[in-house]
Image (tube, rainbow, N blue to C red; front, side, top):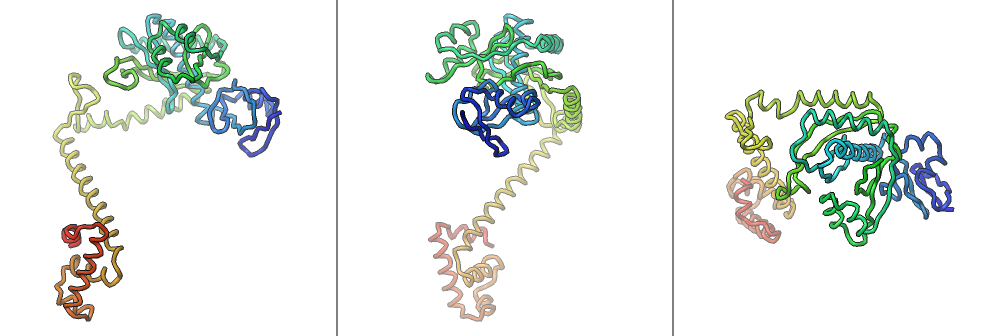
Length: 357
């Protein structure tokens, strides 16, 4: 038997070789139904993961970030499966979960159109309704390369892996993909999906590489949650800087230049210049104030007072001597010693004279 410490601190015993899902079932059937993945010793793992030694374990449902990621990562594979059904010539690249959704990159002859996205989304729903088995398996490097020989991007990813790296795959129905996981046990509880848009993306984010076609989407277990998310996206569009910037005459874009590079209109250029000057002034002020504070902390209270009166209040030596009731010679001597101490702190006297005025 092994000891498993749960999130609430309680300890359960389980047979060696139990899976995370087995442990979830031993806690409650309801938890097992809602579980999407687990965290073993802080590391996110598939529910299929076998436990062979004492560990900490957290069962992750869709309410957790890890649970959402597992669901959306699985749906990204459904997206890839649907694309391969409809566009067999497409080459698959990568398809991770991201904040609030997922994406998958494809190498295709032409970019996906809005009509294509509708067809792909419909095909994804068919696959989810079919509820194909989801299987995880591992292969040695040579067999993995043979399996993915018709997918050049997967071959490249396999070759990028360290020699001792575990090479794992997930099979959803007749679609197999190179993937470290985790994935959900079943698609049947995923009731709401939506493909949001397509865009271009360089392979591995490097502009020297080929431009791929990326499809973005999201997924929820409940349609009501998806509807609320889509409504929030629509509200955000109303405050989208791209939309507002054009409407207010701040910037425009040109297809010859590219949508990612805004071209400032006169009003936008004025705003930019004003902000730039403010940032430069603010950085200068903050840095100087910090340096001044560090500088003055090197001095005694009396030396700080003399420096303040001389360089900030701009009083004469005679005026300072009268205020402090000491001789002018003592004032000069005190200033000299203060400057000498600040120079020891590797602060130039010139700095003092320039900014402590």
